[in-house]
Image (cartoon, rainbow, N blue to C red; front, side, top):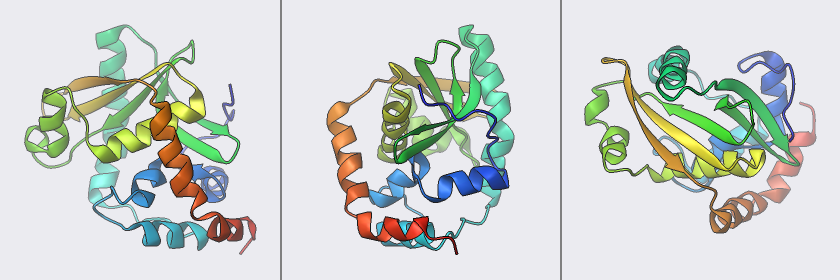
Length: 193
């Protein structure tokens, strides 16, 4: 499987790695599922190498990720570690992957009033948001994992809800089509600015 060794998320090397790859975190934006951006803005930012400035909510998510992963590992007796993977033109920065490399972890930590968030309400019903589903399906494609656990983390109570997501090959075709739609623009990413 295509893990990229010794590549730490958030480093300049990681940013350069992401620059020319079709990343899982960008897929919801290209599909029009990210309420903070548009497909056009997503591709313009990618081509121009514009990193989204870190918001307080994003900083909160990064801060909470190790705590949520530790909770998951203890609750489920599974050792998940962060990792970066690549499959051809597609990449994924994972919140966790198990030792057998057949189960991945994606953590979402709603910032304000976690239990009133759309993510928490959906997770209580065993569902996920469309944006989270798109990101996780992209990750499942890249890693070829058998399943993903989506954790919705309530940092106020240090508890989470876990929803299993299985690979959806039909959805992978949706992901491929949307990325291929921007093939010409993406070719500009390979030019060093």
